[in-house]
Length: 483
Image (tube, rainbow, N blue to C red; front, top):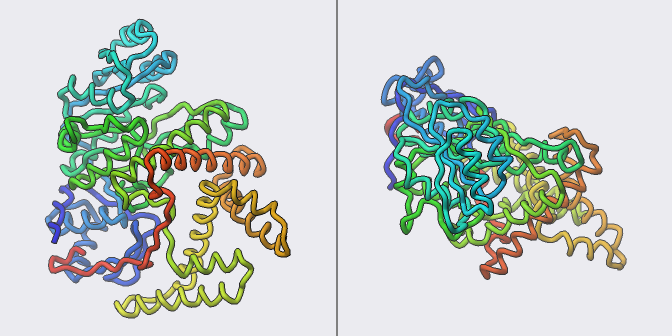
């Protein structure tokens, strides 16, 4: 049995996640993965104190930790009374102009170390670093961003390290704002929101709303299997001691990974008991590719990391998670079998009702929740189909046969529904046709990279959907009133 985590420290407040709902005085629903949390009487009393003010006791701290770990709430740290020492690290290979913009945006509060990862023009890198008062370390062999960051860690001794990629433009004080989170001794790293800097063309307008590094406006705990399973190191503030504890074979970042090294590090920190937070109230800007060839090649490169990551953590890399009855409902709708779809939907509702009643949980809103599950399943299947089977779908759409019209409708639904829904929700400065074309190209490029990585690694793990047997986690109450 795992030991409970240390309470959230005194002074922290919590903010409920927008998706959290109070079912009764003692039952809460929400989190990621979705769950029902049952409070004892003592837990209910602790919640009333948390609702009115900050953590001020072991009981409120224990409940606050449980709520923030499960995603039902998010920590709001108090202003720090003591600033931890901090060094900014910028790995770079070429991109002299972007490095100059990055350094020009830095404030003068913290030392900056540039790691030249065997750039083709080292003199230009050295001149830019000197002009902006930054330290410089030169690597003679290009090892990728992870290796460059590891090199930097051998040259600094501050409590915190702020990793910033050379194509980023940090906002003033971003690292100091995030540093307040480190009053929690379990925090290993905190990531800001990455805001795209784009050009005013088709590619740029698409990337302004569909940037791959922008993880959205909602805060989150970062953990495998949750809404956010990773954060990029394009901009990341980390505790140096936590990074040191995650070393494997002498390295913090796996030198064998040129892409996805940040994902691997986050998973190892999680496995070691550390916490990673995403705080979108702080933003760092990032230059996006200005051409479709640049954007799509980057997406394909990201995709190649799925297979080597799957070798390291097979349970955390599933491309699609399906609940049985919603999946059957979507399949029946695509096959134009409305009776089967209705029967599967009813079975889904009944299975959830049975689960809730077995645990004495109110069952209001089950039909709506089941419909939302079918909707999300359909979007997931749509994206999965585009990423990994688009050429086969096109061939199937063109093939003849008596049921050609029905097949075309189903295939077009798989290809088009998800991009159109995304366009509706994101409202990009782009018409729906061009946005849909861009989204399809984006997904296909990523899927091509995944296929390429799978062939090299001789694995199909990143291509295999997983089946979730339980639609909802029911957390039992504990003897301390904090569950």
